[in-house]
Every structure is written in C-alpha cells, then in structure tokens.
Length: 386
Image: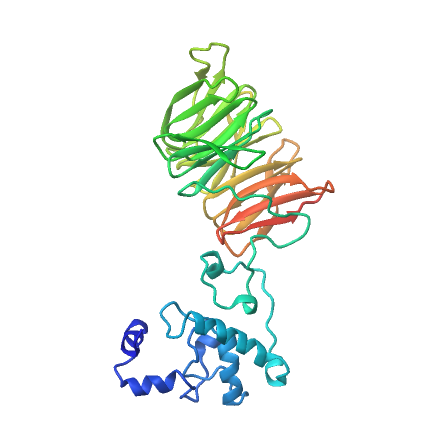
C-alpha cells in the first residue's frame, strides 16, 4: 500500500508523502496519545508520545512490541513477524521497559479467532478456546454454516443432534465425531430438545418431532412465528413462540396423531425465548424482560418475576433456586421468599457482556458447575454452592 492510500484510509490531513514518512519513524509531537491512555492506539509508531517519562528511543522499541498493526498498515506480513521477534529480544534486559510489564488478561483475542493476530506470544489476550482446570476440548464438530440454535442427545442413543439457523439439522456419531446425516428442515431452527427417543425441533410456525429409534416424524402445527424454546414434562410438550404464547400438547398413544393440543398459556406481551421446569412449575422468560411462573397441574400463572432490564435469554432450576440470565449482563438467583412459594432475587452476578445461555452440571469431582455462554464468544464456568 502506498503512503497516499494509507493516508486516505485513516483520514489524515492532505500533506506531503515525506511528511508521513517521518511519522512512521518517530513521534513528532510532544503530546501524550489519548488513545494510548485508553489502551487502544494502533499506530506503529504513533506521532504522539505513549509515555512522557521514557526517552524517545525506548518508546520506539516499546511501541513496536505492544502496538497492534492494522490490516492496511505498511509492513504487515513477514516484516511484522520479524518485528515481533526483534521487539521481544529487545525487551529482555532493558530495565526501562521491564518497569512496565505486560499484565495478563483473561479475555479471548478476537484477532486470533479470525486468524490474524500478529502479536503471537506477546499478545496479552488468550489464544486458546479454554482457560482453567478440569476441562479440556475433546472435539470440534464443524459443518453448520450459521449459528447453532440447539443440541440434543436422546436417551440410549449414540447420535448427537444439532440444529442451526442455516435451516439444517445434523446427526453426529458420538464415537467418531463424524456427521452421519444432514437434514434440510426448510426453516431457521430456533431450539432443540429431546425426551427419551423423541427429538423436538422449533421452527417457524411449527414443531417437528421425530423418533430416533424408529425414524417416525411429525409436524406439529399451532405456533405463530418462530418457536424459540421447548420443554417436556408430565407427558406434555411446551413451546414458547414469537407471539408471546406458550403452546402445550399432551402426548397420547395414537401413532397417527401422538400430540394433542391443550389450551395455550398467555400472559407474556412479547416472544417467549426460554423455558425450564422444576418443582412442579414451568418457568418462562421473554423478550418483555419478565419471567412467569406456571403451575404444571392447573396451567395457570402463579407469579410474575420482574428484575431484568433486557431479554431473559435462559433459565435453570437448581435445587430450590431459579437461575436466570439476560442480555442486561446479569445472572440472577431467585429464592423462595414466602411460605406460599413466591420467589424474589437472592443474588445478582454481573458479567462484562450479555449472557445467552445457562447450563448446570457436576464436574469430575462432583462439584456443581454453572456454565454461562456470553456474547464475547466465551463460555464461563463458575462453582455453585452445594
């Protein structure tokens, strides 16, 4: 890239090429760079100082080792690799630079995700999909073209089912990790769940059900709009739909029509995106920012929980507690507040990003673990109190 192209891409004033050649070699201003103070300057080197207490030649070496090179910056490629190696060498034994050690951070490097981080080992962010103990990646199943909406492992099956926003479901062999079958569903998959041999898929205006043992499949009509959430309990199938209704079907022995529609549950004013079941209750989370509690026997709403300030993305029952997460960057723990069983917030945990989904499990040593999928492309693991 020539100097005129680089100049126009970053919006510099119209000056001579010789002027900008000087800018690429040394700082030309006595001012401290405000972007450097915020930790996000990407000039290499910057024409403003990054630390007034450092001599200019020391700053020049520090800038080379710590500054990210933009995609359109001159010298990116083989020169950047050699520059990283030189800068790391110059750091050793240089007391003026060692006074400012790099602080490790636990955030995932977004440039590494897309394969273009030029800092290598000098990058302060993680170049690994996981960080911690007791857990390690076993396999990476690739094939879907868009985001994965849900996965299911039917009881007694050696096949893993996954559904995606690309409109397909894939069936994976649990022993080999290979995809055995791709099913075109004809619409975006909103959710997946399973109960014994049955696999249920939420689609626009319908729920598809198929039996993983005998291959029988059914299209269950009734929902309005995208089906975002599915749950099964007490021989009933619950589906949270885009119009705010929760559809309920009761299972029966008829092979021709095994699912009978019951009365829909209405109360949410916007789409229902999360469902969970526990302690004879159905809990539903919605885009309307509320959680509703339904009696499984009467199918009536017994409480409305208000506390989140954005979409309630996922719900989890853990012992006598209800755990919810939201795009408002919080996880809330709801506990029983009265003898009648009413719930109120007992604890709120804050994240740096919105939270998409929750899951719970026990690790290898039996400790309860909460898994939180966040908008920063990470899954965070937390110990839960027993």
